[in-house]
Amino acid sequence: MTRLIPGLILIVLLTGCKMKEQADLIIINADVYTVDSTFSKCTAIAVKDGIILDTGDDDFILGRYRSGVIKDLKGLPLYPGFNDAHCHLFGMGLGLSRVDLRGTKSFDEILTRLSQRYNESKPKYLAGDGWDQNLWDVKEFPDNKRLSEMFPDIPVVLSRVDFHAVIVNDAAIKALGISPGDISVPHGEAVIKEGRFTGLFLEGTADRFKSVLPEPDREEAERVLLAAQQECFKYGLTSLSHGGESLNIIEIMDDMYKDNRLKIRTDVWLTPDDKNLNRFTSPYRSGRMRISVIKVYVDGALGSRGALLLNPYSDMPSAKGIKVITTEEFKRLCEWAYTHGFQVATHCIGDAANREALNVYAGFLQPGNDLRWRIEHSQVIHPDDFQLFGKYSIVPSIQPTHATSDMLWADERLGDRIEYAYSYKRLLDQLGWIPSGTDFPIEEVNPIYTFFAAHFRKNLDFIPEEGFQTENSLSREEALRSMTIWAARASFEEAQKGSIERGKYADFTILDKDIMIAAERDVPEIKVLMTFVAGELVYNLLP
Image (cartoon, rainbow, N blue to C red; front, side, top):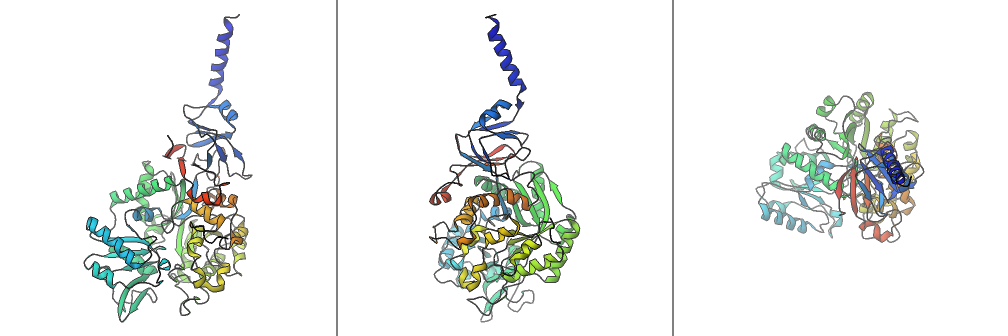
């Protein structure tokens, strides 16, 4: 009998192991924020085939599941994979190879950066992104005379931080083939002095200068997308909504998803041109790519005074902004979306633009609908119009870092109307949920900055000390929900992702510190240590 006991114990142990369910990955000893309906926590997760099998404490998961891959996180915080609800993946990838003009303090500094790039590689054109005249000592749009003198023979196209304005040299203007008085340039979209273009162009005319730059071929486009994807993984993003794209790039993305080179989950919005609308007559899904939204613009940006206001700008009484689409065309696109089962996501900054979208939407949406049509930015709202979001179940999609980027000068544009700008808490109260994003590359990719701006309402210099209009700050829980489960809900994917629950995608972000309890000064410095998509480790800083 004594000799039999070890054998019986071994049989019991082997039988117990065989009874455990096989998992591909087990994570233990983690501080897991599930972001479920009760905001519960756990310490362990089992994953199989890219899906969460189960959650619980370590003993529960290890007692029920077995795996050849067990990761002990030693108490590190783990969250659902971050989801950027509004960004531009391809544009960010392109920007990685362009001249970075963010943070420049003068036009002279821009010229210096351009000269450095030109001297390095003698390119056939120069493209740069990110200038903001509001950061300069002289807060005025520049003239392109010096730019044209320095680069007389190659096109130079420099996009403002919001991508609603460009500064270009004379060679770029010549390449586009326009001149002052050209009927193809709408009123207000070009600055003309003494009968000549100054090089500053806004909105649709600014977009036309994209044609001056060579289109990336397929091989380059693929490199751009892969570089952008890796940048997202670096900052813990596992999902995003890609705000408007051409058919050519969408088809390249589709092929890259099919051969598993693109892995980030992407809600791709259609630029509503004829090519896209003829190709996608119903919502389309291919693996991790979803297409069922059209992107529309009503106005421009506040920084370039392109945002459409009900009353004139406080710092320029002659201007009310630019309406970039007619009401008739807007209604036509909404009718197409309604008929074909697509969401509409409309860019609205000014109070007049938001009112336009709210009223046009109301012609299609019934109270209590669940179509989740969206207004992107929802930046300046007339006080009479907030209730329309709730009445027609219209989703306000916000970018918290816009508030902290704009706050140092926005009151100059808006005057007393600043009280009703960047009103995230008031907008949250309309539906009880609100998605957030960055609008990268306009802002930094890092979603930790989104969280910081949403809750603390300060920029990365911790200004203002008391916070900006803190009555509209989100709680830490609300901020985290906005970039996980609520962002998923905005794209009808809350049943598949956005929280750590059985049956959902195994998309996780692991940080070096807990954003839910970290001191204010520590939050912007928090780093992503690991990013998982469908249980696959796609970014890792740990040994």
